Image 1 (tube, rainbow, N blue to C red):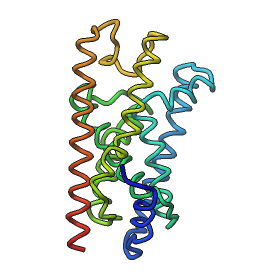
Image 2: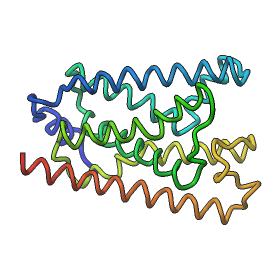
Image 3: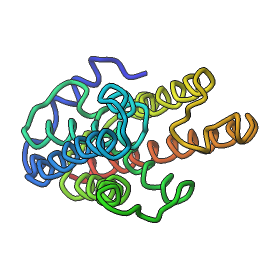
Length: 217
Protein backbone atom coordinates (compact mmCIF):
# COMPACT_ATOMS: atom_id res chain seq x y z
CA UNK A 1 0.00 0.00 0.00
CA UNK A 2 1.13 3.57 -0.70
CA UNK A 3 2.16 5.48 2.39
CA UNK A 4 0.63 8.78 3.46
CA UNK A 5 3.99 10.43 2.76
CA UNK A 6 3.97 9.18 -0.85
CA UNK A 7 0.42 10.42 -1.48
CA UNK A 8 1.21 13.78 0.09
CA UNK A 9 4.33 14.13 -2.02
CA UNK A 10 2.35 13.42 -5.18
CA UNK A 11 -0.36 15.93 -4.27
CA UNK A 12 2.18 18.66 -3.53
CA UNK A 13 3.63 18.18 -7.01
CA UNK A 14 0.31 18.77 -8.76
CA UNK A 15 0.51 20.95 -11.87
CA UNK A 16 -1.07 24.28 -11.11
CA UNK A 17 -1.74 25.33 -14.71
CA UNK A 18 -4.84 24.25 -16.56
CA UNK A 19 -6.34 21.76 -14.17
CA UNK A 20 -8.59 24.25 -12.35
CA UNK A 21 -11.04 24.20 -15.24
CA UNK A 22 -14.44 25.91 -14.78
CA UNK A 23 -15.92 22.75 -16.31
CA UNK A 24 -15.18 20.97 -13.04
CA UNK A 25 -17.33 23.57 -11.32
CA UNK A 26 -20.17 22.83 -13.74
CA UNK A 27 -19.78 19.12 -13.08
CA UNK A 28 -19.81 19.68 -9.32
CA UNK A 29 -22.97 21.79 -9.52
CA UNK A 30 -24.71 19.22 -11.71
CA UNK A 31 -23.70 16.34 -9.42
CA UNK A 32 -24.97 18.10 -6.30
CA UNK A 33 -28.17 19.09 -8.11
CA UNK A 34 -28.71 15.47 -9.17
CA UNK A 35 -28.12 14.27 -5.61
CA UNK A 36 -30.68 16.71 -4.23
CA UNK A 37 -33.04 15.85 -7.07
CA UNK A 38 -32.87 12.12 -6.33
CA UNK A 39 -33.52 12.77 -2.64
CA UNK A 40 -36.57 14.91 -3.47
CA UNK A 41 -37.91 12.33 -5.89
CA UNK A 42 -37.49 9.59 -3.27
CA UNK A 43 -39.51 11.63 -0.78
CA UNK A 44 -42.11 13.24 -3.04
CA UNK A 45 -42.53 10.61 -5.75
CA UNK A 46 -41.71 7.35 -3.98
CA UNK A 47 -43.14 8.36 -0.62
CA UNK A 48 -40.05 7.52 1.42
CA UNK A 49 -39.39 9.28 4.68
CA UNK A 50 -36.60 11.87 4.65
CA UNK A 51 -34.46 9.62 6.86
CA UNK A 52 -34.97 6.60 4.60
CA UNK A 53 -34.26 8.67 1.49
CA UNK A 54 -31.03 9.93 3.04
CA UNK A 55 -29.93 6.40 3.91
CA UNK A 56 -30.79 5.14 0.43
CA UNK A 57 -28.57 7.81 -1.13
CA UNK A 58 -25.55 6.08 0.39
CA UNK A 59 -26.82 2.53 -0.14
CA UNK A 60 -27.23 2.93 -3.90
CA UNK A 61 -23.92 2.88 -5.74
CA UNK A 62 -25.02 5.33 -8.42
CA UNK A 63 -26.18 7.94 -5.91
CA UNK A 64 -23.11 7.51 -3.72
CA UNK A 65 -20.90 7.93 -6.78
CA UNK A 66 -22.75 11.09 -7.83
CA UNK A 67 -22.27 12.67 -4.42
CA UNK A 68 -18.56 11.81 -4.32
CA UNK A 69 -18.05 13.12 -7.86
CA UNK A 70 -19.59 16.41 -6.75
CA UNK A 71 -17.24 16.70 -3.78
CA UNK A 72 -14.08 15.90 -5.73
CA UNK A 73 -15.04 18.07 -8.72
CA UNK A 74 -15.81 21.00 -6.40
CA UNK A 75 -12.39 20.68 -4.76
CA UNK A 76 -10.62 20.58 -8.12
CA UNK A 77 -12.61 23.56 -9.45
CA UNK A 78 -11.81 25.64 -6.37
CA UNK A 79 -8.15 24.65 -6.25
CA UNK A 80 -8.56 23.00 -2.85
CA UNK A 81 -5.74 20.47 -2.63
CA UNK A 82 -5.50 17.86 0.09
CA UNK A 83 -3.25 14.88 0.54
CA UNK A 84 -5.74 12.33 -0.76
CA UNK A 85 -6.81 14.23 -3.89
CA UNK A 86 -4.97 11.93 -6.30
CA UNK A 87 -6.54 8.85 -4.75
CA UNK A 88 -9.99 10.44 -4.53
CA UNK A 89 -9.94 11.60 -8.14
CA UNK A 90 -9.03 8.19 -9.54
CA UNK A 91 -11.55 6.52 -7.24
CA UNK A 92 -14.52 8.61 -8.36
CA UNK A 93 -13.48 8.33 -12.01
CA UNK A 94 -13.42 4.55 -11.72
CA UNK A 95 -16.75 4.50 -9.86
CA UNK A 96 -18.44 6.80 -12.38
CA UNK A 97 -17.36 4.74 -15.40
CA UNK A 98 -18.37 1.51 -13.65
CA UNK A 99 -21.79 3.07 -13.04
CA UNK A 100 -22.26 3.70 -16.74
CA UNK A 101 -20.96 0.28 -17.82
CA UNK A 102 -23.09 -1.65 -15.31
CA UNK A 103 -26.18 0.33 -16.26
CA UNK A 104 -25.63 -0.41 -19.93
CA UNK A 105 -24.81 -4.12 -19.54
CA UNK A 106 -26.62 -5.35 -16.42
CA UNK A 107 -29.49 -2.95 -15.86
CA UNK A 108 -32.13 -1.46 -18.15
CA UNK A 109 -30.37 1.24 -20.23
CA UNK A 110 -33.73 2.73 -21.26
CA UNK A 111 -34.46 6.03 -19.52
CA UNK A 112 -37.50 6.23 -17.22
CA UNK A 113 -40.07 8.93 -17.70
CA UNK A 114 -40.32 12.30 -16.02
CA UNK A 115 -37.67 13.79 -13.77
CA UNK A 116 -36.29 10.34 -12.97
CA UNK A 117 -35.24 10.13 -16.61
CA UNK A 118 -33.41 13.45 -16.42
CA UNK A 119 -31.46 12.35 -13.36
CA UNK A 120 -30.81 8.90 -14.84
CA UNK A 121 -29.43 10.45 -18.04
CA UNK A 122 -26.98 12.56 -16.08
CA UNK A 123 -25.85 9.88 -13.64
CA UNK A 124 -25.35 7.04 -16.10
CA UNK A 125 -24.30 8.84 -19.27
CA UNK A 126 -23.39 12.51 -18.91
CA UNK A 127 -21.49 12.32 -15.62
CA UNK A 128 -19.16 9.40 -16.50
CA UNK A 129 -18.37 10.80 -19.93
CA UNK A 130 -17.85 14.33 -18.65
CA UNK A 131 -15.61 13.27 -15.77
CA UNK A 132 -13.57 10.96 -18.00
CA UNK A 133 -13.31 13.57 -20.74
CA UNK A 134 -12.19 16.30 -18.33
CA UNK A 135 -9.56 14.06 -16.80
CA UNK A 136 -8.15 13.08 -20.20
CA UNK A 137 -8.15 16.59 -21.67
CA UNK A 138 -7.70 18.95 -18.72
CA UNK A 139 -6.29 16.85 -15.92
CA UNK A 140 -5.23 16.84 -13.21
CA UNK A 141 -2.57 14.17 -13.67
CA UNK A 142 -0.68 12.88 -10.70
CA UNK A 143 1.76 10.19 -11.91
CA UNK A 144 0.39 7.91 -9.21
CA UNK A 145 2.14 4.73 -8.17
CA UNK A 146 0.81 1.26 -8.97
CA UNK A 147 0.62 0.78 -5.20
CA UNK A 148 -2.37 3.14 -5.29
CA UNK A 149 -4.56 0.62 -7.15
CA UNK A 150 -5.91 -1.30 -4.11
CA UNK A 151 -6.89 1.99 -2.47
CA UNK A 152 -8.59 3.23 -5.66
CA UNK A 153 -11.06 0.33 -5.56
CA UNK A 154 -11.41 0.27 -1.76
CA UNK A 155 -14.57 2.42 -1.63
CA UNK A 156 -16.59 0.45 -4.23
CA UNK A 157 -15.44 -2.86 -2.71
CA UNK A 158 -16.50 -1.67 0.76
CA UNK A 159 -19.86 -0.57 -0.66
CA UNK A 160 -20.33 -3.99 -2.25
CA UNK A 161 -19.60 -5.75 1.03
CA UNK A 162 -22.04 -3.54 2.95
CA UNK A 163 -24.75 -4.06 0.32
CA UNK A 164 -24.41 -7.85 0.53
CA UNK A 165 -24.34 -7.98 4.33
CA UNK A 166 -27.29 -5.62 4.62
CA UNK A 167 -29.19 -7.61 2.00
CA UNK A 168 -28.79 -10.90 3.86
CA UNK A 169 -30.06 -9.25 7.04
CA UNK A 170 -32.96 -7.23 5.63
CA UNK A 171 -33.67 -8.94 2.29
CA UNK A 172 -33.32 -5.52 0.64
CA UNK A 173 -30.77 -5.23 -2.13
CA UNK A 174 -29.93 -2.05 -4.06
CA UNK A 175 -29.78 -4.02 -7.33
CA UNK A 176 -31.58 -7.19 -8.38
CA UNK A 177 -28.42 -8.96 -9.54
CA UNK A 178 -27.16 -8.90 -5.93
CA UNK A 179 -30.31 -10.55 -4.56
CA UNK A 180 -29.13 -13.94 -3.32
CA UNK A 181 -32.66 -14.98 -2.34
CA UNK A 182 -33.97 -14.55 -5.87
CA UNK A 183 -30.90 -15.52 -7.89
CA UNK A 184 -28.96 -17.86 -5.61
CA UNK A 185 -25.51 -17.34 -4.15
CA UNK A 186 -23.77 -18.90 -7.15
CA UNK A 187 -25.20 -16.23 -9.43
CA UNK A 188 -24.41 -13.46 -6.96
CA UNK A 189 -20.85 -14.75 -6.49
CA UNK A 190 -20.38 -14.72 -10.27
CA UNK A 191 -21.62 -11.13 -10.45
CA UNK A 192 -19.33 -10.09 -7.60
CA UNK A 193 -16.33 -11.58 -9.42
CA UNK A 194 -17.35 -9.75 -12.61
CA UNK A 195 -17.74 -6.45 -10.74
CA UNK A 196 -14.41 -6.84 -8.97
CA UNK A 197 -12.70 -7.65 -12.27
CA UNK A 198 -14.31 -4.58 -13.86
CA UNK A 199 -13.24 -2.34 -10.97
CA UNK A 200 -9.67 -3.62 -10.96
CA UNK A 201 -9.43 -3.54 -14.75
CA UNK A 202 -10.66 0.04 -15.06
CA UNK A 203 -8.65 1.16 -12.05
CA UNK A 204 -5.48 -0.33 -13.53
CA UNK A 205 -6.20 1.23 -16.92
CA UNK A 206 -6.69 4.67 -15.37
CA UNK A 207 -3.50 4.39 -13.32
CA UNK A 208 -1.58 3.36 -16.46
CA UNK A 209 -3.07 6.24 -18.48
CA UNK A 210 -2.33 8.73 -15.70
CA UNK A 211 1.30 7.60 -15.47
CA UNK A 212 1.78 7.65 -19.25
CA UNK A 213 0.26 11.11 -19.73
CA UNK A 214 2.15 12.50 -16.75
CA UNK A 215 5.46 11.42 -18.29
CA UNK A 216 4.58 13.20 -21.54
CA UNK A 217 3.42 16.43 -19.88
